[in-house]
Length: 109
Length: 157
Image 1 (cartoon, chains in turn blue, yellow):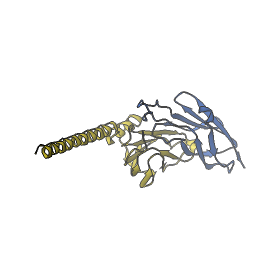
Image 2 (tube, each protein chain N blue to C red):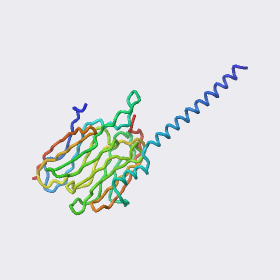
Image 3 (cartoon, chains in turn purple, orange):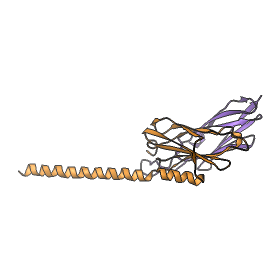
Image 4 (spheres, helix red, strand yellow):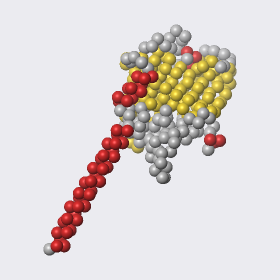
């Protein structure tokens, strides 16, 4: 299951200097809330993507701590101001400390 | 003679039992309600993250008035503010006051974000209020809330 987890990122790859661009992200993850019970009536242990982090050229942009109230396959969007060409690096980390990263290049004309 | 009487008793017993089940059902519903977050626990959760007394304004929450499916309710939270080194939104905390746990998400921003606006999809177990608190870099707090009516809850199962 965990092998299937793949982050998807949508952001414009060309921007003007100083432009604030929107970044839309989605990672396929069950986001098991820890509230559900299996067929035997036992609680299914919590397993969610609990941390999200975005940097641009190594400089921090934003980060988020997520709670079980965030839906399955968490969709997150945010903004970043691009002053120079660079790489947007996103990292998702789940309760098992497993993490996924994605890198997207943005070119400033 | 005995037959109709026993029938009556049977009916009474059945009614009593039905009443008993009814009470049990109400009790379990109440217990479920007790387990859910309340406006107070949501406030406590937010207060633990952002100390101080928040003022109304600057923060806006966009969410559907009625959500048919509580499993994925699209929510947009934005803060009206410039994002410069001198003045920017440092953090944004989102809570829901009717879920099993009050927390939804807690964001932190740097001026590089350019705009303090996020979108996400949340689970809402019942009709409840979303509350968002923004913390500015100078420590000022702003709050907004919005009620979302939920037709089918989206927690547990």
